Length: 496
Image (tube, rainbow, N blue to C red; front, side, top):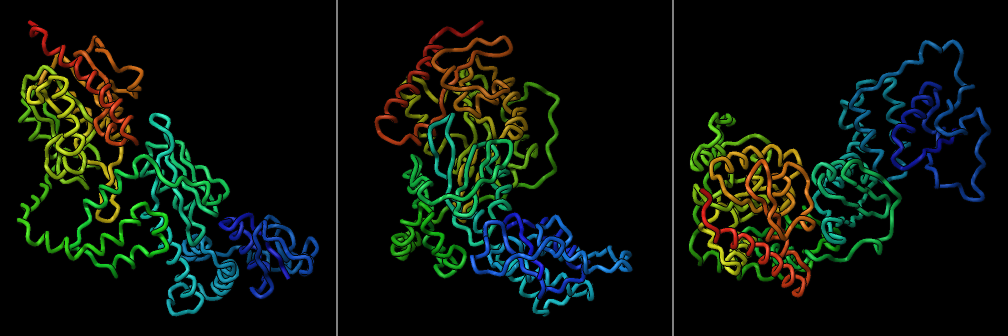
């Protein structure tokens, strides 16, 4: 009997090396047992065979003594690429027999290379079903991980808890690294944990659920948003349960709302039917990519028309439309936000959602007429993460900020403001061309040799995310104080 011990539950390379050596040594599947380091044999289990008989880890050729010298030319053994792909995925399944079943199919492929094309073969069908279960579990992890914020910006970190059915954490982690590349996060599971520091993914041992955060300061805002976008007219409970089984509900913050929202769905649907119909959404134009104008100081109207077809980065693909800046052609102050939100993406105008309402209120308290300012965003398309029917705001990354900076520069050249107000880290990054801390540089006007004066402050949405009333009131007052510097600037005589 040949005992093969793999380094981990997902040790595909170790399994492949051992399986190849076993096949070349003509070792039948019934003569092999597979274990993983840590799954030690019990006290009265059969002792491991002596070295030279397949007892060593996967680095030693098992059963070498059984390989006749005359068979040396047969040391080449190729398998279909489809089997290798199937094995990589099936290894992640939780069934302890997966290693043996994969080896059994590999053993049979040596005699019948076309076996992978026979979908009704019991071994092929079983492993295909296991691979499908792994892929579905990975899809569920992508869909149902919910990050919670730990700490405060700029040192905040995002942590999520998930309970996968199979060993998929390491395979699923690159998806989150791409999707949330601009924030540090950890995904905790009972099997393994994935961590992203902005540069590389690290995998550590699993932890207990008690290590995961229970809620964060955005929880109330998220639940309010989830309830507001719930569409009772499109509710299909059977389809919802099929796509989002109840076992995932306990890790979703919105789970507490699902039952009461379903219970109230019929009444809400009737209310929607009785209400006036909304205007249909205009389809987005699909035309060739824009070409940059040779005129540095085009009018805002011309720039807006040109930006409508911007394809400088991929954010235009899922967005409804370009949300360009608005305001007087010769405004003395330019307010630069970070990016459009959900409401702005649908309306096509900047700062019309909750953050825009907060901005309007603060401008009024500071004594500023918004109509006299030019309002825009560093990034002109809404970047979001789809969660079913929900679109969650996602921070633009550096390449997206750089791709959209041409529009800010051309707006600046067209409006020629005397003062630019950068609201939030993304806006500061766009205006200054580099990552710049806000709190260390706010509260005063910054003179610049290569452009108008600059004021850095927080984004209005930051005020909406604060956890308690005292913090909101305190930070809102600071925001208004920053804007009062803008009001004082507007009271000065126009520059010659």
